Image 1 (spheres, rainbow, N blue to C red):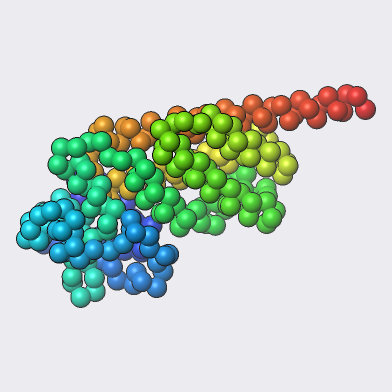
Image 2 (image 1 turned 90 degrees about the vertical axis):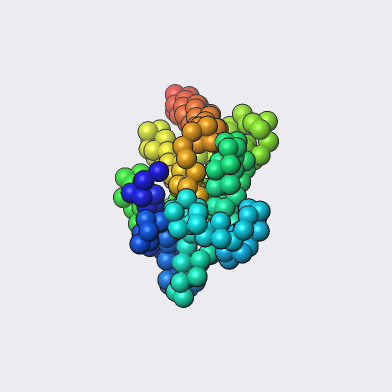
Length: 253
């Protein structure tokens, strides 16, 4: 992966990514602590020795991997190396010939990053969002959680009960759009906005962990697409049923 391809900005901390003198890719932790959300166990910072212990190698080996740009590494203001727990695990899963990354670990890391991606600035540019009052906007921002949690459950259960979970989420998005006067097209646009945020976050997790594209990416993206496609279909079916129900009521009057 080229350095240019590996410049997606992390969402957990506002960091820059200057290239090291020897060609490795490093990240600065300057001004990070004041804006961090609570760090989960999967997203904790590791020292050089802790990362080496997790990988089962000598610290010097981790240092070499870092300097070559193979293993994602961050720098403190004092110049010390720091590693993200979840990135080390994801990197280890593929760098040692095992392409079957645990999808649940990926989703947990992605969901942890999503909160800061759903910003008011991004949403304000959406036409459907501009038509909503403040109460409706709050409802939509909060509804994103059900999508992300539903997908995490779907991945964790290997697809069991996926149809019922997708139906429930699709109904939620359809009924909310119908209640606030959005068209079926705008209802779909609203859902696709949050779906795309989720996809971008998943891809970002892989990029930040320096995971090469291939089977590992294909597996999780297939699961995301399969689940969100079911939701979108249920959303459109539910919205259409609500519209027909209103029309029948008007005809009786």
